[in-house]
Length: 381
Ligand SMILES: *Cc1c(COP(=O)(O)O)cnc(C)c1O
Image: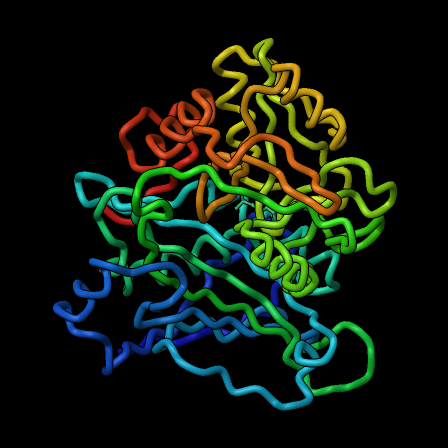
């Protein structure tokens, strides 16, 4: 079953004359039968199982975006000289599709992911993908794999778009052949036994990103650099690592894959400003909006470890939480670090505002709370 694919030579300039892509669809004849799929959806974990199909769009310097396909999920054949394998020219996105009570399927702010993908693309010298194509790719995948969106509370389908350099060339320059893909993986409730505050570890030996680097881009290299400090966190009984700014080593940047917020007692919400070394999280952005709606003052500025320590001690800082698409909002109980650093305590309960914001945001995502900012985009009835 396939429709003809057309070669598109269009440039990624977001112009109105952009024609929709015509995806060639090849259905997976080894797709899991509904019974097996339901068994997986009953206990999907995170990032372990993948749906039956994937999206694959090619780009070349001479042909632009072309050969859009929906095809069976499976290995990607790469030349061993493909530049991504040597120079990490790669970017990705992460977003979720939610099933509402009436069965309909919705994506949360996918337009923001499309825009961010292009900001990452610019930094990594990859081609920009017209936003319309990004959204179309999402729709095409859900059209064939919508049955993979689970329905139990707090579950979703995690969608992972990514782009990388696949030209076989060992010289160092931006690749002239690139692939854009979308895969999807059903995700269980992040906190299966109720929201549990976490302990985090302050990395002082390692940085995630530096001035002029790639910290603001969603690129695999940032994660590669965070893995060693992340294992250090595990060794100290912490589930996440927190990074300081590389330049002065004094203020808080973000966690390995989540942004951070501080609740102050005087109705204020403080989060590190987008300095160029932290990732502009869509959850972060949404939380700032919801907090302002509640009448809180939201401040983006530098936050030092001393301010955190003294603020918790004096009662000025009442709650701390991390946020990102995967866990939405995770309360932070304590920060630990070298030389006996200890802020907060392991048994600190989740904060009141932390949980209220979490309930509101997940409420919007699952259709329980009115979507007054029009954040949801319907993918299927
Ligand atoms: C993706 C990511 C986040 C969170 O972004 P969301 O859009 O909220 O999911 C935060 N920090 C890093 C380093 C990330 O890669």
